[in-house]
Length: 80
Picture 1 (tube, rainbow, N blue to C red):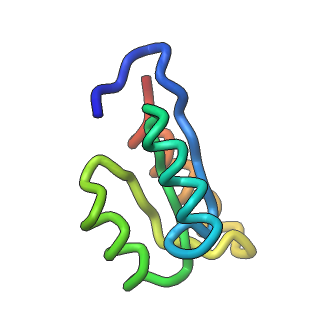
Picture 2: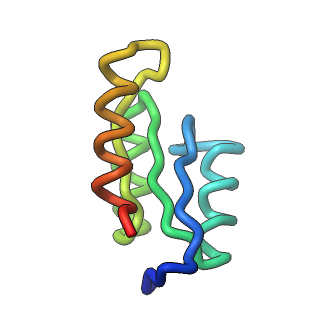
Picture 3: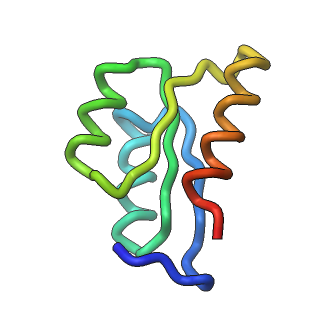
């Protein structure tokens, strides 16, 4: 997927499985640049392996340090 300045950039939390994964996949198929996070490293790795252009961070959004890292990773991964 090529990124243009008009391409949406999206962060989806709890995205390694279930509804979160479906949301991330829908954004990817519409051409968005997507970064995901999840607490389940194995599921996160599986999703990223199947979608090499996808950015991902293991993060528990109830932990402020994880949230800081998540936003830093997201900015780096989907910066215009």
